[in-house]
Structures are given as C-alpha cells and as structure tokens.
Image (cartoon, rainbow, N blue to C red; front, side, top):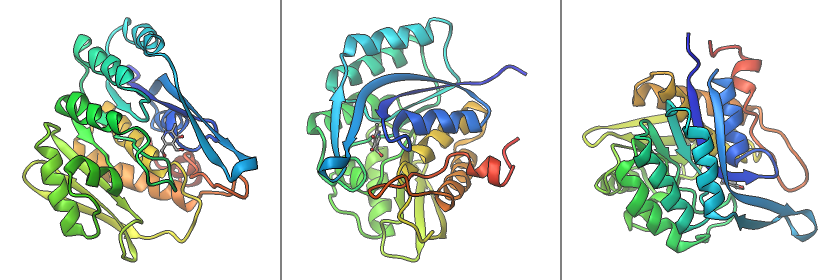
Length: 273
Ligand code: PXL
C-alpha cells in the first residue's frame, strides 16, 4: 500500500486545537502523511482575556514551503485554512494550478472562534475569486457562508440551503455548510450541497464549551477522507462522526479555552482502520 499524502496551507494555532495543528493531527489519525505550509502565526494573550494576535508571514516563504512539499509530486488531497494575505492566497492558487492539485478543500477561515468580525475583508474576496473556482469542496461555517453568499446572517436550514446554492455558483463543486451548534436547535446540523441535492447531517448537540478547533478538524477530516479515495458524501459522513467524537472528548486547556481532542475517534473508540 502506498501512503496517501495530505497537505494543509494554514495558520499555526499556538493553543494547539485549531489551525494547522488540528489538520496535521487529523491527517495522522486517518493514516495519511500530512504536510503543512504555514501562512500565519496566531497567538493568544492570557493577560488580556485571550485576545488573538494574528501575524501573517511573507508570501515568498509560503511559496518556498509549497515548492519544497510539492516538488516531489502532487499530494492526494489538500486543504486551506487561515491564509493571512491576498498574496498568500495567490501563492496557494498558483500551486494548485502548477501542480494540478485534485481534491482541493477550501475552508474559508474568516474569523477565530468567539469573534464575529471579519479578520481581513480583502482576504474573503480573494478566497471567493481565486480559490472557490478551483475547489472541490468548501466548508464555510454559518458566518462565512453568509459572507460568501452575500445573504448575511443565516438562521435556519432554509437559509443554509439558499446560501449553499449561491456559493455553488462561485464555481466550487460541493458546499458543506458547518451549521454545527450555531442554529437554534437541539441538533448540530451541517449541510452538503452537490449542485443538485441537499444532504443534512445532524446529531444531538454535545453539551460542552470545549469545542475549539472543531471546524478545522471537520474540514481536515473531509480532506483526509478524499485522499483515501472516499466520495465527497462518504468523506463528509465520516468526518462528522470523527469531529463528533473529538467534541465529545474536548477538555479545558485553561480558563479561556478548551480544544477538541483529535485522537478521540481512534483512541477512545478504535475505529479508523
Ligand atoms: O478556528 C479558526 C482558526 C483557524 N486557524 C487558526 C486559528 C483559528 C482560531 O483560533 O488560530 C490558525
């Protein structure tokens, strides 16, 4: 068996639960070989109510990382996370084109958990214009889906469906809207749209505040599933099970934050072969 290769182009979450740390841990749990190109470094200040510092790195250095990783041949699937600047978004698109990358999952990260202001509006536009047209799957949360679709605040499953249709028209084949626990419901609800049909994925909400990194982990799990040859609907279903186990086993890191545990699905329940 040849090992499948996965790549994340994403920010470093120094608190360990989200960002490229979530992606690499998830890639490993799926039995794939994970690569990362760092785009941004995120730090949090415990002396200032865990305020986030977001520091993008130079796009030239992102290009060099991508060249290092991809010069040995393409990966089986890739995802993006926090990208940091329009230049970095351009570098990512160039790599997708140059190496003809397949199974491209764009997680259009626009906010950090708990903050609902766009980090950099110009990045949102560049993700929409440069990355969605070449994406296999995009995985916005409710806020990001509202931005990408232009519909603003989404409050119901019907709103999610309308947003998914609009986002699909931007060129991406499959849209997964991570409603998660954000809708008013006792269920955590995510939605897949393939350009024709909607599939709803729902489980009972897990009663916890320790879910930092859930969105990144869900998108990374979809990516790894695609690398292993799953169809998109299969990869989304498996990813939903994987992230639900991770949320059920989240823990308090400190008084501000609790990450999901990426190892839960395998190590607590021994399921991924
Ligand atoms: O959860 C969004 C996210 C993505 N990427 C990085 C982050 C965060 C939130 O903290 O730090 C690097």
